[in-house]
Each structure stands twice: as structure tokens, then as C-alpha cells.
Image 1 (cartoon, rainbow over the protein chains, first blue to last red):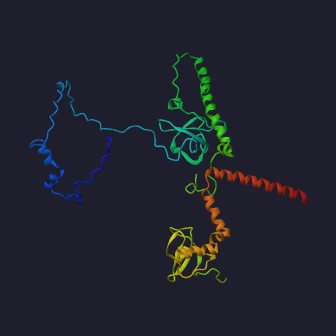
Image 2: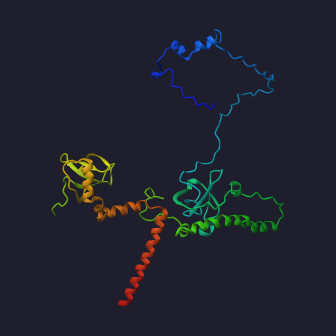
Length: 233
Length: 133
């Protein structure tokens, strides 16, 4: 916009009631000053020259006409975006995982990945939960926060957690089965190092708060008399 | 079995139902058999059914329907707030509110404290038992 801010113009033709303006067509013609514009232009309203229509390339008639009418799929303008993160979840929040092998574990939130899943860590030394992805729906958010400013989670994304594609080996009988079984369950050393580096800074800030370490090490469970709809987390 | 707490002008009551649940109010006038005119420093004076009120032991010295300033002054003079917060009823309510607002982490800390206290009590009991045994 031009540097001079123009005052927003009040409506020229206010509504008397919805659908009925105060001024008639002839009055509005006069108010808009169309007579002055015409007079300036010598009696006729100024016109733009029509742009020369760009010559469309001549379309050849199609070689093939389908026998029955082919239906076109409906237009879909939806964009894929990560799940909206609840406002109460910020980096460093303690979450309670509700399903899976780590159900009940209290865990520290690190960041939301592009797929929408939450990146979370135990820390591993405290409760055995490694760097892991967790769905927002399977989580209770507590109001306890841990300081995660010293932790760098830039390098983790969904690809880091994806299944590794193995190169297909040529089948040889006999040795085949034994060799496969041994390789399966070893976690690569670089993932272990990543876990250690993320946890080192985290554990320091956790130990600064009294009882927080044992809190994260304990599992959450409902006891007698606890009403989930009345509990404040 | 005579009554001890009477509906009278100046009686402090606790609201037990409705929008003002949990508030302490002063009865400033009686409208009819069922309703009282009720006032508090932070609310507009209005009528309330007696069924919505629970009478307390506290009474302040006011005339019928005082204005807000006089009411507040009378409440300060009688020290209603402190009397209420030191009464066993008032203390119970404060504890209930605190318990309801506890965080998950706070509940964990309370659990640790309870276990510790029980441990100390048990040790003392064991000592006393040893002495008498």
C-alpha cells in the first residue's frame, strides 16, 4: 500500500433494513461521481482496450472416444498437515502413555514430527522408554514441565524411525535360517549413542527437581477413589 | 436438642447450591418463610432460598439491609474471614479444595510423604513396644 494510510471509507449507501438501501440508483450515480468521471472522459465512461486473446493452439480431435461416459473423480483440495498439537503440550511436558508396552509410563515430550506423532523419551535410564514416537490420542498431558533447552532434537524425523529396508540376499539352503535369526534384534550403535546424548542433558535438568526422577520412574495407575473426570493432571 | 444457629440478620451462611456455590454470604433481611435477602462483599445483593444456604456459627453486627460499605466494615470488625478459616469446617473445605487441585506430580509427592510418615510412626511404635515388652 502507499505510505499514506487512507481512512477506511464509511459505507456510501447505508442499509435502512436488510436489502433496502437509503439512496436510489439515480442518487447513488450522483454520489459515486460517475457524472464527473464521464465528463472528464468526454461524455463516455472510460474503457480499457480488450487484451488481444492469446491464440490457443489448435486442438486436435481425440483419437479415442470411450464407449461409455467416464466419470471424473471429485475435486479434492485437502492438504496433508500434521495433527494439531494440543495447546497444553510444549517441549518438556511430562506425558502419561496410555497404551502399548509402555502404558502408564510417565515420559518427557520433545517435539512433534511432521507425521503428527510426538517424539518422546523416557529418559531411557530412568524408565526404560527409548526415543520413540507416540500418538497424541494415546497420551494424558500433565502440567509438569521439564527444562529441555539443553537438548538438541533437530536430527530426529519420521525416517529415523522407519523400518530399515534390507538388501535381499540370495537364498542358500541350510545356512539360511540360522544366519537370519542372529542378525535380527541388535540395535545399531548410533541409535544407542543418540539416546545417550539426548538423555544426558535431560537427566541433569530432571535431577535438579526433587522427586522428579522417581516420579518419572513410577508408572501411573488409577487407585480406589480416583475419578478420572475429576482429576487435575 | 434445641437449635443453636438461628436465621437472623447478620448470620453468615454458606451457599450449598447454585451459581455461588461455596461462597460465604450474610443474611441481611428475611423476605418470607422461604427466602432471605443475602449479600457478600463480592456479589450483588439478591434473594436466596433458605434451602440453598447452610447456616454457620458466625454472626456479625449489622442493621437490616446495610449498604455495601457498612457491610464490609462490619465483616472486617467481626473478622469473619479468619474466624472461618480457623474453624474446623472452614479448614476442612480448604483441604478439600487443595486436594482437588493437586497435580499428578503433587499426588506422587503426597504419596511419598505419606509413606515416609508411616515409616516414622511405625519405628516409634516399635520402640515403644520394645520398652514395654
